[in-house]
Length: 215
Image 1: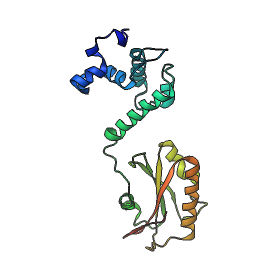
Image 2: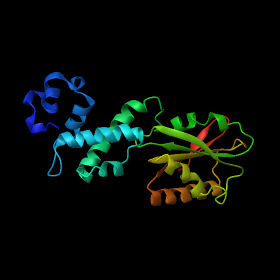
Image 3: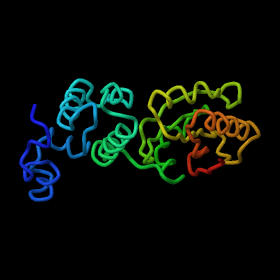
Image 4: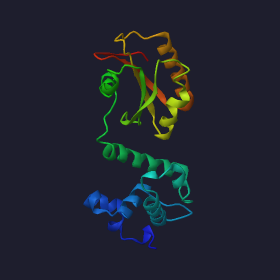
């Protein structure tokens, strides 16, 4: 395998990118540009080749531990690579997912429970850019702290690798006033979220005509 030092200077990834643009680089050359330089264990060309094979094997499921399995990649460089991949994913792969960054936008996702005759408790999971990952019904029935257990709420959020959640439920009575049970559930979920590192952004109550934020 040709080492970076053996390449003509104008054919090295950084110089080629500067002169011809990123589109002129192959996937392999782009990986070399991201990695930057090698170390005592391996030249950047070998690290890039190992990373390219890992990407082919793992695809979107690539994890931080996968990167560390490449012996010549340390934690700092692995973090840099994962951050770059995540930024790309958020910018391009998730562009169709709505951004939920206000109570109004959260309420827009709840039209299906507004007119229910029973109370529906749902959870919206969000990524680090506040993009919606999924919406799930957690429970159906009168809201109580025993019925809405943090384990049930956060189980799917953990599975989704969510950065935060928004919970919501409907009031079939049409009364937007939060109850003691509503507030207890909110506080319990906030505390659980702190322990799990998944922030509870909001708790929304909806009726057929309006909504209110109580978190």
